[in-house]
Each structure stands twice: as structure tokens, then as C-alpha cells.
Amino acid sequence: MIALDRPWLSFDLGSEMTVLSWSVNRPGYVRARRILWREIRNADLPPDLDVRAWLVRELDARGAADAPCMLTSRRLDAHVSRSARAGAVEARAVATVGLSNAERVGTRMDRAGRDWDRDLAAHFGTINLAVRLDQPLSPTGMLEALSIAAQARTAAVLEAGLRLPVGPATGTGTDCIALAAPAGADDYAGLHTDCGVALGRAAFDAVLRGARDWLATVGRISDG
Image 1 (cartoon, rainbow, N blue to C red):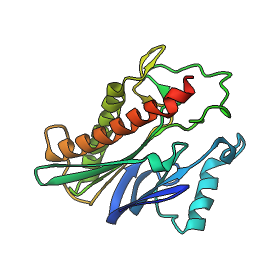
Image 2 (image 1 turned 90 degrees about the horizontal axis):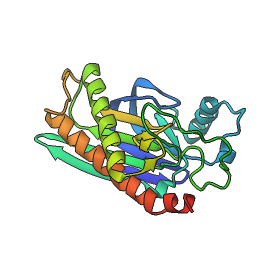
Image 3 (image 1 turned 45 degrees about the horizontal axis):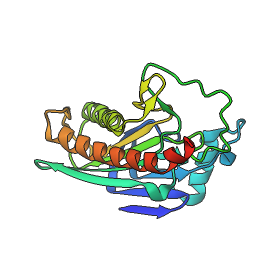
Image 4 (image 1 turned 120 degrees about the vertical axis):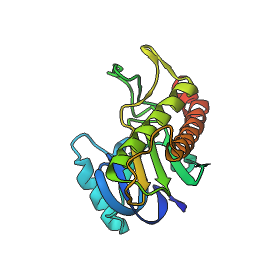
């Protein structure tokens, strides 16, 4: 279900599903069989590059134009996968977690003068999270489920304990979340539902593990 072929990571959904995300190449509601990550470095994305057009070309060359794709400088072999079940609902979350451009919601860090070429985590040390549900959801239900995934992401970053000058980090400036589920009529996926519990637990566990791994390795080097 998960295949690593750097600089690509593929999360096979098992069947074509509705995917809701704000990915660079296929944002919004789309139909897809897989979700991809593309590992990048600063040299891949010069300031004058049309990133979306570049990514579309990369995906076309791979025969993956249909797949929503997320960008990260986190090593893809550091990805984390976690599953959770509540009642009859199972969720699987896959996350890559970098915190080099961490932010606290409602504030913005001043990073002027930072040496990005020296920084091992680079510009796009971001949190990219994909969650697959086996619970059929309506477009409204998917919106609520996406909010639970975002809540789980933020709770995990807070628990990881990265402190910024403005307070505890809650995410990064370039986070992306992709949620996949079969099309259905269920409008509800909140914290009181099996769907919300399963996806929240899987997403929380994956992001927390990834954040702790980053803090213990890249984060420690970057702060040195």
C-alpha cells in the first residue's frame, strides 16, 4: 500500500476514492487511486520557477498525473504510517514531518537572513499528512473529517513540544493534508463518531511520531 522510490513516496488507496486536499497539483475534491509525495531540495525550486507547472511535468513523466501530490524536503524514508480502528471504521495515516518552518497559529516568524542552503531541513520542512478512511462520506462529511485531521495534526505538534519565541508551535507554514474516503451519503465525521475517533487517532499518532523523530535528529542539528 505504501511504496518508497525516492524522490517519490506513493500511498495506494486500494481503489479509486474521493480525495480532498489543498495539494499543489490537484486541490479540492478529486477522484484518485493514490496520493504521492515528492522529496525536494532548494535547488529543485529556484525563485522564478512555476512550481505547479514543474510538478505537473514531473508527474506526467512518472505516469501519475491523476495523483494529488505533496512536496517536502523531509527524507521520505522517515515517513510514518499508523492505523486505528473505532467500531467498524478503520483509518490509515501516512505522514512526513519536518518542522524547520514551524509557526504558531496567528503569528508569523521572522526568518529574514536565514541560511537555507546550510539548513538541512530547507524551506519546505513541512507536515504532509494523508489519511485513508474506509467509511463512505459525503462532501460535507469529508469537510468535517478534514477538520479532525487538522485538529489531530495540531494536537500532535503541541504534544511534541517545539517552542518558538512566540509560544508553542502548532504547525508549519506549508502544511498539507489529503483525506481519502469512498463516496457516500454520511454527512458526519466529528469527534463523537467512530470515523472521527479512528482518523483522529491515526493522524495524531503518525504526526507525533514524525515530529519526535525530526526533533531528535534534524531539529537537534539545525539548532546546533
